[in-house]
Image 1 (tube, chains in turn brown, yellow):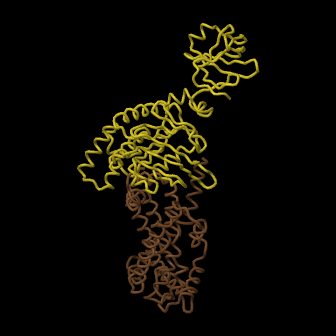
Image 2 (tube, helix red, strand yellow; image 1 turned 90 degrees about the vertical axis):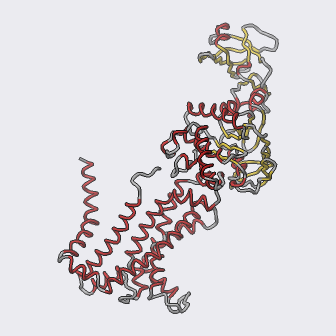
Image 3 (cartoon, rainbow over the protein chains, first blue to last red; image 1 turned 120 degrees about the vertical axis):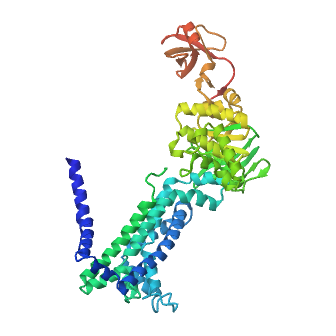
Length: 258
Length: 318
């Protein structure tokens, strides 16, 4: 009886907060048939927003993955001064509101900012990429570091005593051991990169057909009382996110030879 | 031959080794024996190159290895917790050292098959380490270390994580393997029985220093100090001397050099009988007798007896 009660509470919580809102978006989207939805997501602005969203993610996620793995290795395996400080700074993007991040980027890279090189960064795609990298930075580090800690360094030491150099040890021993941590970090980074609104909104300038991602498109259509259009774009975002999760489920073997 | 000279190693405020020197002859099986925290594992890891000493030098087979990384020391290392590559099969684990050396595939295959045969894992090549028992995993780790034909085999508490029965089996098996392969082997252990059983030389470490090095029997019978004596076997105090409990003779009547004692307890442990005594000065002593000796004396609590040391072997004035 108590078990059943817990289950009802847990599932009810998930339903009210997650399943029903997301489900309603899909319901509202397809309420008036597929044709209208299709027209709504194939306007030039929507197509551009779709590709821009993927483009930004395609730049930000690989960069954060490489950085994340290197940082996790340095944090877990290294012995150096200032480690605690770096450890704290890594989490900054989680702690700081995305809007603040966007404003900070304008202060640094905008006209008259610290690093104003004359190259258009703010109110252009490079600034949006920077903002996306910033907000999705901690995911890979935070997924990979605990895995590294858990597997310990004995396998790496064993590889060294067997004659493997640092590169061979990393590619043949460390990387295969942390690959699911990386995969999960990549999925979370991708989801965050695609869904980012606040920071990107501040630095984008919201120029239709140029600096408009899917989340910005949803917001614009909603503000313009184009509810059907907003729902359709939202559904497209949700589909991309689900595809990312599905991709991970498919590549992950059911049973790890742990 | 391994020569470690004046090795000092500090971890923060803790000095694990204070200027330790040790020679390990070629082809020997040497045990580094000591309690936890004595520095035995640190010394092994310094020899392997897994730890860099703060001072001192390591020479392996005439070559100064002090500054060499583990990859270039020609060693095989076996870890207490196996350090198996979990994502590789048993064959891939054993082949690892040969693969990173880019040996021809046919050579790797035949060498791995041969080694799996030697360690008795012939039918287990396609399994993953998680599908093996602890003893099997450690044999796999040994095969993996031996695959690259190291000049020195270093074992860090290799049987420490196994249960008593498997431990005894692997011990006997390691001894046989060493007799066949003759690779210079260093074994770290805190178990004196294991060291006496397997090794032909033992170095006893205590608190970052080597107390004594020698053959197992020499250490047992001629310990350099009370620590070595106590670590290698049971010790009891008789008057002003530390002796082995089996080196004490109990007699019903006074004998030259004997002293009076009262029996406080007689414990029958099967073949062995333990007699607990209180000496005239009020100190306690334990004596170990065989069942036949005890039966002949017919001892009971309260008896007055006369004790003296015999055998004249391990004896240290306390």
